[in-house]
Length: 265
Image (cartoon, rainbow, N blue to C red):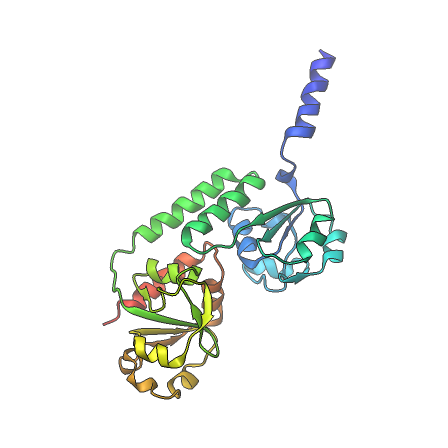
């Protein structure tokens, strides 16, 4: 009897996932949002400087930039698990030296990839049911978007003509919202487009993340673009910019808004 109890105890110690009561560090704002959406936000002990949603995330210890986190600070926080993006950066080797559970998640280039990230995080946090429920809710809301405008959309991610190609998460967001990325034939994620090429492709809608609408309209020959003629140049608000640049559950709300913009007559 005692032997059986001992075996059962050892089973729970060694085989029950540690992470049900984990100390979590998230090195991407999108992971932080997913963790909160799954109900595990209270277990976060460290996040990046850019993790600002939900409001509770602002109160959590900062561990630096997600491209160059403070590895020493991470060590002092004694995490049980670290969620990190799949970049080829040298600091990943330093984090691996901490001998903690490090989960490297590949970059998201589509909405389906968000579902994958939610499943991965849910698995490691013992929140698989919650993950499936969240994914189901997102899919249901996206399925409700029926009207497709198929308008040509140019998204300027940053000043100087930086935009998204076919392999970007943003390109899929435009598609899910019923539009067509004007540069969806460029087989890359993000690149610097020539202004002359933007004019040539003549987008029906322009979405600006960091470029001001005023400076965009002052560009040479901007008046020739359909989006300018039809007053369809939009600059996103700060929160909306975060939503478009972060592959998190909140993207569904922005897709709905973009769908409304694309379908304006």
